[in-house]
Image (cartoon, rainbow, N blue to C red):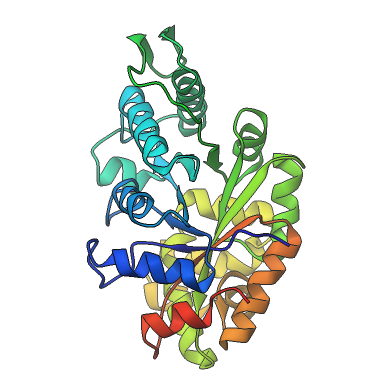
Length: 317
């Protein structure tokens, strides 16, 4: 069992300044962590900096910051600054992200994601150790960079990882991996690639409602939006869901979004999205923990309930 139990922030419909009271409440309810992301809402660092300053009982983490959208030096500075604010309570997540986020939304070429992630990880490790870096990496070069503010406590660096190559890199050169869009029964395969002595964090999508039809309707739209992205599609082929998801991929490729949602099997939905009563949801989260996830982080999609009630109902017991 784990003493870590996180939740994804910022909450939809809650302004960043309003999160101050939410952070205090989360700590009181027994949550240990808040984790941000960096896609198309808030950046990954600002919500965490606010939490680290306002609520000393919570750990903070980002899952993940794309390695393409910040230069290596700025990435190191951002990590070092948040580590200074959080004073030992920060876990950094680096990842390749995806072509839509990097190329379509940020105008940066999404080239050689594995190699670039590896190079940024190596650069960040050197920078946080206080080295002056003058080096030609495979995907970029840096000359004469050194952090002017020393990092007193280096944060763990986890990699967002889906397939064997990145999972092995996370274990070999990072401190562990951040998993996403997987079933509890998939954790072991990922753990085997990362290695036994590394940290595994995972974002878990939760729809706390006993209306199974409504939960599956919402879940199917989420699944078709994510699992049609090539990176996630390949992940699920590796995990063995290719045959069950092929009808969705075929319909999506034909432009039939409605059918793509309809052909996702119930059992795939129930494996990848946690739903049901609060007790059933907590029991499902526990299966991830038992499978080897040390930092489960809930991404709550409230349906028919107030966010505050969902956050309380899903809190660790």
